[in-house]
Image 1 (tube, rainbow, N blue to C red):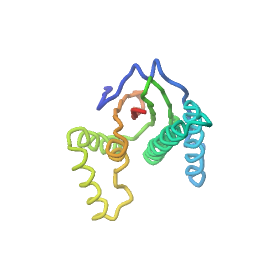
Image 2: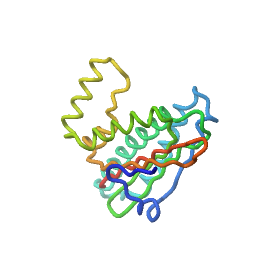
Image 3: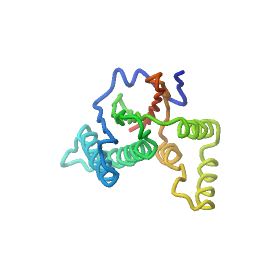
Image 4: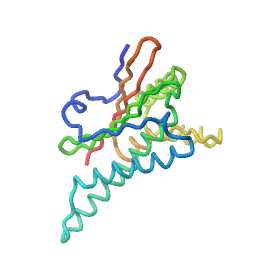
Length: 192
């Protein structure tokens, strides 16, 4: 069964896509995955920045481009990092990361296959995120991360909403029945 959670818009995928990168994680050694992620993020954000040209005599165009590129870098890195971390290594399905542009909204989208255990944890976190006060939830997660001394603070999505006022949405779908393979598509909408 497919699910839509949060602020996920199908029309964006169909009508406003600029490009999509596919990464076949199973073909990349563990030692090279971080570097591959950095290169992918750099490519995407350079491409996005190029859509917002600068004018030599207008400092505001440089500031706008830098602000957009900085936000796109953080968001893209967060999406790819999560995809690589939670990728179902038993499935040879690519991680897909896309960018879309609709008027004054930059949309970054990542699709990943996940195993059932990670999907259950992710859904529980998404439901809590969607039903909680974001600021309160953010500070609870900060405290939880400090208490548990964990590197899995789950602050990424919270930072996107808290620090960038981004709208988040998810689509969970079954792409294969036997064996069952599920994907999670995360959509981040950023007003620019």
